Length: 346
Image (tube, rainbow, N blue to C red):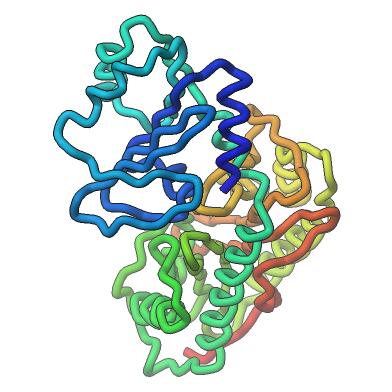
């Protein structure tokens, strides 16, 4: 993925060698492989993937694949480079110190911003893989609704296991630990799914398939039993806010503008919206672009991200509606499951 573009950047910046070390996800981004351990060396003119002898050697176009042997770092000292590129967000202090010893005269340069920029704008191949992951995610959700049976699905964990089973049946894996949260558990955005017995109230699902290393992310909130007037009103408000925010997505606007707009639209419940409105999605489940005020990221073509407003009421319930979307001249929903309040028997 965009290796040649990265090499052009290295040449322009005078970076003679860039080093990515496991578990840096950018190794998978550039090579589309997931070795158990790897180091990726990139110069303006070459690329070498060093992997464990325990891994099968992949055949990669434009990339030399070699086995990591003892003393593999000795050859680096032969590189007469003035700048060495590293991903500061991943590299350990121990590796940093090791590089200083190997390249005592070279300057270590942070390349993390460029890596984020490359990953944020998706290629057509990446969009296809993410779209497939989203379709599998939708399929799992729709199968759950279709097969719903209170006796079959009587705990949070059984619901989560079913969703993950459907994903696996369609050549995907869960992109992250599936969240199934019932009642007051849903007031915790990053709740750990348990064997909690399902009861009347909201059931929040946050899950997504990973297909050929690329992720989907979707949240839906179901109602078990009959909703109260308060529950119905708050759900309808959140659904309305998400729809309005989707309509506001335009090329060139700051993601942080959408974040601020969400707070405004939630009105009296804005203090109950305790996380960012979304995040980039791709080979990482959370990646650039960012909705934070500090990031100053703008919406561009080929960006894939989530829109996920949520409101949480401590020890009562929580609501979140989330979709993975693509912006390519206009907005396209990649997750398309129903967003209206679905009521299920309990």
